[in-house]
Length: 413
Image (cartoon, rainbow, N blue to C red; front, side):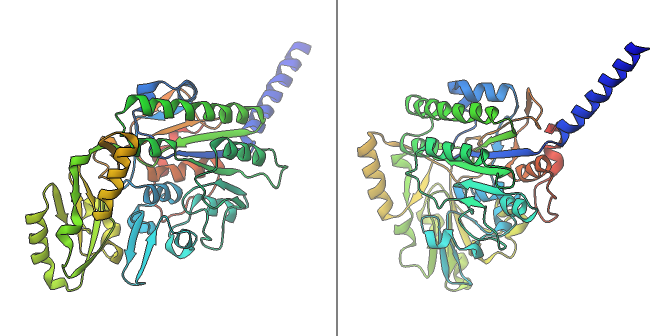
């Protein structure tokens, strides 16, 4: 009889402990490795990321939105919305209604919340009583819907990675009530290296991957020592493709003198006509004088989806070069010539092309107490990360997002 009582007591305590464990507060650290292409881990086998993946979840690749650029892609991760809806249609674009430019290098624009649509995950967290923190992530510098993260920094690319990691650990060491439950963190190493040398330069890419992997290993190990239920998501905004110097296309010479304004270059260029009736004539002229380039309707569903229907920011025409070609203006030739001399290469890395090209795909790896382990899933669009984070943190999922909770739902313990 005594043995039976002990058995039921142990069973009861086990159920209580399990219930307590399930109810423990979960934490999420969202780490973005800018420009980390989907195949880098497989190619270079970095120790810490490889172990992290083995004990967690990995996707074959993470599919960015169009265009596969840093600002629109990061903000799609942050909001669960496509660029045509959340408003950041590129790193640099023009709003013809406001007659203003948004430029990623302009702090005044980056910190102006009126440019940012949707409800970023840190705003959702703060709105629901959870503190959020960010050591750099697109949109965190701006006040959006009346909120900023409780802790954040204005972007400074010169801050060493280990200083960023140390601050994340400081945040996790804060007392209850002050400790953030959601933290975002950003590293640009692979984007910088990929742009300089191209993604196929094994020596330079491997060097950058292994250096970053060692730093991430410090964070992974330290997060486990906190005793908190810390779930870590490692993502990237886009991949990268080689661009040869002789595949740079002079778009300025073709558009110079035409009755239009144009913004951006590279993989996407938006044209705003002075007179809409000139559209057919200008399209013909561009097609005649610029090879390896498509002149398309920016409101076509294949680019910005349904969100592009009435979006004036998209302009009247859009130029998209073939994969491996890149549109530049005259100052661009100076920049690339300088880069060629400085890094002794005629091959560069670029991105922004349509996500149908696998080279544009990034990464999704997840590991933590709320996440299943040893699972590889198919490629998926990055808008689905938002509801996944909501599920881990037990946050309500806004009904206006494009992300679908069912895509990653089976990954939560």
